[in-house]
Image 1 (cartoon, each protein chain N blue to C red):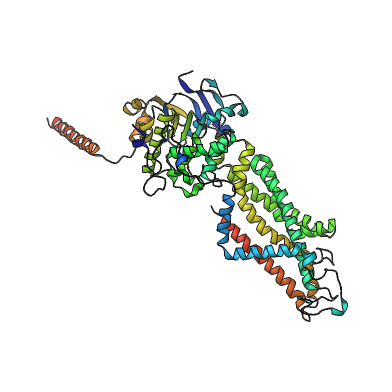
Image 2 (image 1 turned 45 degrees about the vertical axis):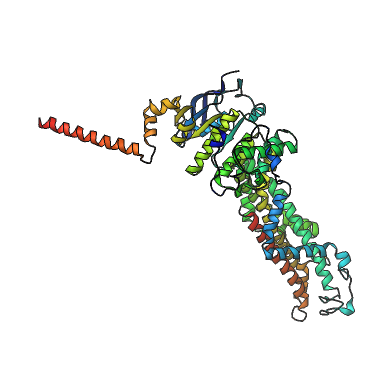
Length: 284
Length: 317
């Protein structure tokens, strides 16, 4: 068995034709090790979501090959691809709109198991209870509808649904971007816990550098559908090689911490000294 | 990191927060400790009924409509007379114990004729809605699903249908097909499909772009499952609302056609026929116009109340 659960090579996708063609994904290759997380960073419109959808074949890529768990899953018809859906799932940005408003959350989580004819009614309901418990939602509320939950809870329900088929690989498409900062932390921690316990592999798409730095093992940075930088997380954040990455990291608005303020003060003094020495040089 | 320290809580006040203590320990089964409510089945319908019940006018309208249905379909037994039974000596009587709504110029019992009219009104209006909806929903659904040139072409035809006066088209159709009950609801159905087509198309267009449809596809659902469980339940509300307004519109069209002598063929009674016949002697014998008009007006009002009630439930989520 290959070390990499996912190997996507030279993925390409163009939207539109002629003058208005947009290369949303332009020759991106990624490899993710089992149980690891690859973060994809980029501003809106950089093609990161398209890449995620191409890998899951929710959008048909124009070119490139995708190997999942050692098997080539690109270039085959959707009907042959379909069995792979059990192993690869997605969590969406908007927790409310990705839940069917006409299904109670219990039905929503049970539905994938019904599609795949897993177990009988009783064992499926037991599994629903287990899953809700796992994501921190009271299983007694399984008859409630999505609008009865807060955004954070809805995202937990989405996570439970994605886990219902025991997938190996999950694409998180801006999975915490629509949530409050405090809830974001909870969901990110939940995702990391689940990864540890279930051995999940994540492709974590985000524009939030802090979150990606926190949970990704490797980071891929995209701009206008092209690869900018692809390296282990630490290296990217400590030692960014491209101008774009440096700008991206510098553009994060951060609350000034004590350390920040000290550094700033030191910087100011250093500059003052520089100025003073320049003056004395002119005078001298 | 132990699970108990890393499992996030749900924030203050979240009911599940204290119960969800993280991952179930090996061997423990959470369903042992707590009973899980049943979900699915009729739960959604019960919830809708609870919300509908809050609107007293809508409930009253529904009660009236159910009563009208009962009368209409048991008219053969409930009505005191047959609608064709004449009794010339008792012509043009006003309300009495024998004839609650009085009699017409041939001595026919007006109450019975109003009752039988209800049956014709219901058959014509529901029949026309069924035809209009079947044709319109199919065309709209195909148009919305597949899009492209087909969609553009279909929607232009719909625009033309909207631009053409419905009444004129009805007259042309009735002239071509001849008067009668069947003609009536087929003609009204044909003239009303465009509205349903436009509605269903719009609903499907917006429903199929929802994230939950993509999520369902990602979970491995086929097209049939997506349409049945994800798209239809979400568009059925607006369709029900449209039907609840389409039925009285059908009744109105039938009565209007009957009023100008192009609807049901007398002696078959229809509210429009009765009003039309009674208008000649309206000043001498106002009961000829009063009772059918009152019944008809109340019926339209009841449908409007029910329609409003349904719109309150399904209009917003």
